[in-house]
Length: 240
DNA sequence: GCGACAG
DNA sequence: ATCTTGTCGC
Image (tube, rainbow, N blue to C red; front, side):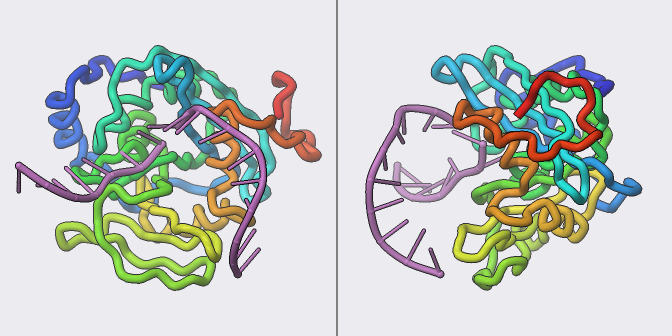
């Protein structure tokens, strides 16, 4: 997919924070997209003791959730992990992976926060702004915000609050497991984001999108056979 | 000063 | 994020 890579990219924490404060006003948290027939999952892993950043992107059909395409990209790691500044460490490799996609996903689920961020500009928001596409933030743990007790039943959720505002939601994607922290990335509302995350989570704690991207980004077990990956799967590398 | 802190 | 097998519990 076509991507307009940022011209200037922060090298230090100060300029990175300044950029976040500048971009936050551009985030749109109302639905600004039509039908969704493809959803993508993005995740990042590291190699060489962290010296190399590996980004993985997987595109699935929606709502079937059948694998259609995937791409991997490696880049030297140049920004440290600093809570609140994750996008500056991971986005460069993510853009490289997305740029290789033949399919332009209708919606992207990111591994990390969206608006549930101290300056309301988590990695999902930042990526959505760069791509000018709808994105959702799905994190496995909390960065900021407080919330009430969450019911145990799957599908239950409570708002995540910070400074008197709702910045996201804590969602029970599966019973008897830790919740997911869902928030709007860009061009989508929190309510709609929750619906899509649930629709992408038919069996496990994590959405299929991020689960598959996770396997590619981390060097674990092999991908499950591209289960009856019907026609849609064009002439790509022998994946999964 | 102390504790918290996405991946 | 990453180092790592089996084990406890729904």
